[in-house]
Amino acid sequence: MIKLIVTDMDGTLLDDTRKLPDDIWKTIEELHKKGIMFAVASGRQYQTLADIFDRVSDEMLFMAENGTYLVYHGKPIATNPIEKLLVKELIETGRKIPDAYILLCGTKTAYAESSDERFLSHARKYFNHIEIVDDLMELDEEVLKYTIADFRDPIHNSIHYFDSFRDRCKPAVSSDLWLDVMGLTANKGTALRTMQEKLGISNDETIVFGDYMNDFEMMQYASNSYAMVNAHPEILAVSKFVTRLDNNNNGVIDTLRSLELVNG
Image 1 (cartoon, one colour):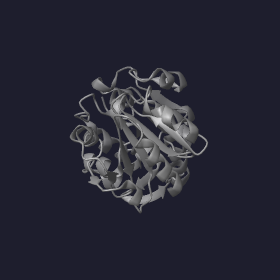
Image 2 (cartoon, rainbow, N blue to C red):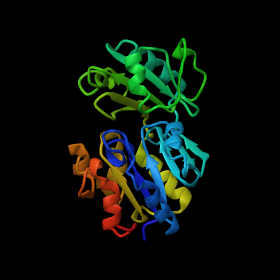
Image 3 (cartoon, helix red, strand yellow):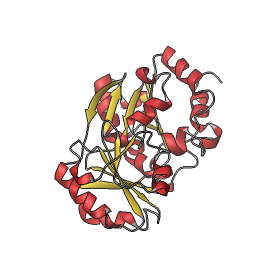
Image 4 (spheres, rainbow, N blue to C red):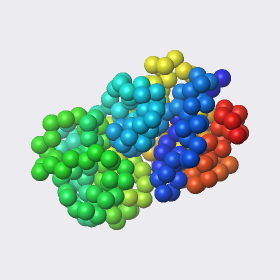
């Protein structure tokens, strides 16, 4: 019996205009009536996710910032921050990358030291709450995720700046613009295991949906992992199943209907 549905957001639940499916609220209501928890696992900050799902956020599970910040029924459950000295080294490195901008993600908001409007216009698509500070080095808060907006393509540019850090943290390209860096044990797969243990839900009772490389550990770990048909090739390869429809055609909800978890 399925008890937990976990979905990524961008490229998975959201369409390419970052819009939720029209019938998402009806779907969540039907799942909850059946005792099935609806959860989001996203690289987005918790505050943004809570804003998006404001109607039902207190009834949901959020694995925000790529699983580094877990919130259940509106209450923080666990964090998995980056070590403070390492954060400073990452900032120093990020400042050297051409055409790239740093965001530090905390539990309360995201922090940037650049007011470049091109950067901020892209960042605000995913981070509703951003505070501009004079110097990121002076920030005295847990950093859950270090993020780079790389306008030259993170796969071919910024990720190589972090090769020497791989024994202390984990860089992951999350889109064609964004590179995320978390602690070595921080990923959506680890977050999913943590929440399953806390909720007493088994892997066989869980379904997950994803599309990109920051979903990799979650898709690899889950017994019932559904890669979006539009997913990255490595996600398609590691997942157990593939959706019939893509993110622009409500592939997540279509799959839930085909499994008879919600009404068609």
